[in-house]
Length: 350
Image 1 (cartoon, one colour):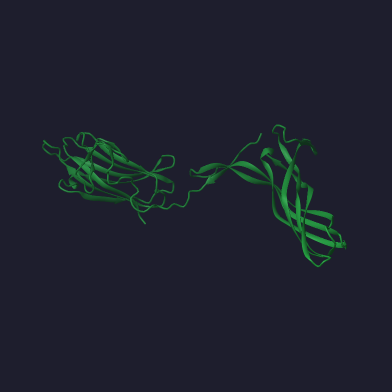
Image 2 (cartoon, one colour):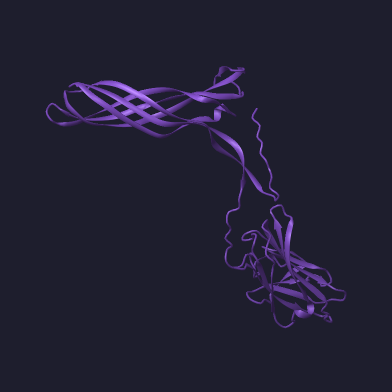
């Protein structure tokens, strides 16, 4: 039974991928001599040249099992899987030739000829394989050359020399450590629907998670904004979105947004809340590896117009894979006012 093992020495989490790849088990250079006498179709004055190519190359490996020290037994392909070794390879193919000659009438002619050949290759070392059904033979640097002589006008004696590299290859399952593709951060806003224009219903924006949030038709731009605390100004509210595209290590990110305070109709306004804006970074396992945040007291949020607020995060950790953009509305005792959020932008700095 084949045993797969690998050494894992990385101090940081890495991603390993199991793949199937061809592994060279054995490699050898061989030479095949093909000697043939051809009866020409007519009398020949001379042979100008012979062009040779090798076709239909095939290789068949033979497997053995060590039954005792130094003694081996042939293992047929149909047998169940056993610990086997490659001992020999039978190489076969066809030497195709085009013979260009001048006949007795001084006419230039050519004739084709196919000569099959077989070569038994004995490997210098016995090479173990994991599964003989996954073993095959490859051929490289195949070259053919033909020498000839014309002992009689109708008989051509040829000697072909074929040279090639023979590789015994096995498809094996192996583990490789994958490296992240050099990232390119897309330009512009990394958030979906940063303008908060798309809503499934009055309390659920399509691309954002929301709690105690409602759609508001007072907007910095477009048609809508998101009002935190709209369902109850005495309960916390949150608006958040997870971002995976464009989030990578060794970069700084800027979060900018527009905010405006809103009074609840029919009540004596009391502005007593805190708005927290955060960009939380996670690695591929969902573990937090960094955070950037801005605390905005209610006194810094105007009631009559939108104001822009922004901050820049620290340089991200090398293992970062995603980010959570989150707004949290935290009311204090006696608070009656809400806060609107619009035109949120998360972008990577150059």
